[in-house]
Amino acid sequence: MSGKLIIFSAPSGAGKSTLVQYLLSCGFDMEFSVSATSRAPRGTEKHGVDYYYLTPEEFRQKIDNQEFLEYEEVYQNCYYGTLRSEVERITSQGKNIVFDVDVVGGLNIKKEFGNRALALFIAPPSVAELKNRLQNRGTDSAEMIEKRIGKAEFEMTFAPKFDLVIVNDDLSKAKAEAERSIREFLKL
Image 1 (cartoon, one colour):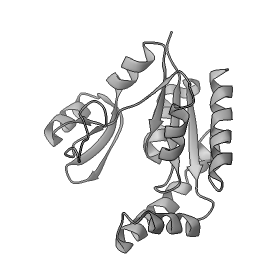
Image 2: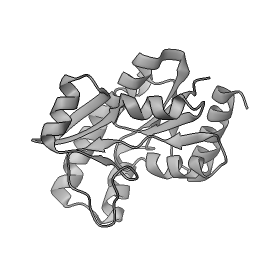
Image 3: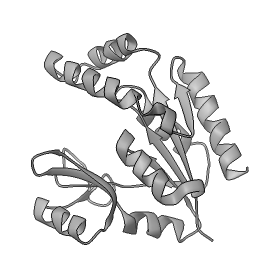
């Protein structure tokens, strides 16, 4: 039996990674999809755990061989993507798979898998609140925050194409709504 796919997409700072980590701790029979990247590992990151690390040449070869469900060249020679083999590895064991991917990648996965996939868009309560969250994180320059806000405004135009939009204005409510929607989707 093949597992189902649960896709989380959101603008940076909306809280999708926090929700994904919470849901992975809830006891659902699901495994996190490890993405591939051509960037170098950071700190204690490990191949096959945090990412599948590929050279830009290896990444492009896999693109040519259509081994990705979705991918993006974030900047020159820096790619991120979801390998078909990762999805097959997990779903062939009957496990469900959860994705933390960008908006376009999430819609591409949904298009490929149709009703086997649940696509959730995590929205910030407002652009102003999103900017506030990004500033409070303290990880980006003012210039980078403005770039992220511009990208977020564009990404939010895709929200209606998702199966469900969860507005993360209260984290406990967003967790409950995400958990409820996954239980319904998985028929638990």
